Length: 347
Image 1 (cartoon, rainbow, N blue to C red):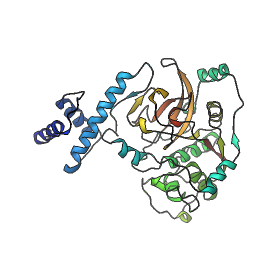
Image 2: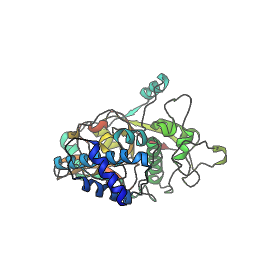
Image 3: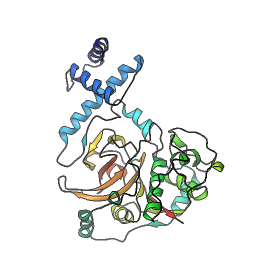
Image 4: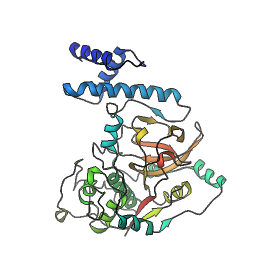
């Protein structure tokens, strides 16, 4: 960083706030310089000060959260999203929503819901202690978790991932499926809230996969934006027969995920700076869902003494635990049980 830029940074820091800071001015400058280099940022002069202050606030938040962390619980760190305010992050990386039309809601309630038989607390704990994780089966090969970019397409990534998993589990080809096909094609007039990069829901994509099909990522590469596609010129890899709704509780989720990874939703506001560990309900995050992810397994963490779900995210392989995260399964942590789980059924 040039001397003039460093001086500008220091001036911005000195003038920006009278609040007590956790680091000295030059320490923030050094950390921000390292961030810019690592994540290849290039800011306009007008945006520089705003990005610097967002980074400073996130560094302070990371430091405070880590001081309060207990053994095995979530830790936080500087990542690709550390120059974003929470409002910017939510606008770009969250897009799970449920259809608001009466007919859509009524159709969801009319669907048969899969619920596991009640078992004792001891039996449930034995299941967590034994653990289960689809990653051991390598069903998402050949790709690690990808980054959805600044497009609210988490719902499409999650649907594509659960279908890809279903095909692999059934013995089919391990082919990466097209997310862009769902972003571009799974918008219908009857489900007004499915709007590509502006958000959507599981049934948007699953209905599209029933009627039109699912496609390979090579045939319809991800653009990260709303673009029109002519599906008459593409050949689908297949179609799904339907999809299953799973009851909203820990027993049903842990039972159903053994059949197929699940499309689930949660509130991701506090996950922006997540680095690793079990994100617990003590974080008091909202239970109003805004992000779609894939539940791939579960287990028990001895250090934190928490039961957890293993979640595959769509924020890239450098975020969290190589693109995955663990969240406490007991209770309704961050709204993980606010909504139903879902998985596709193949023909």
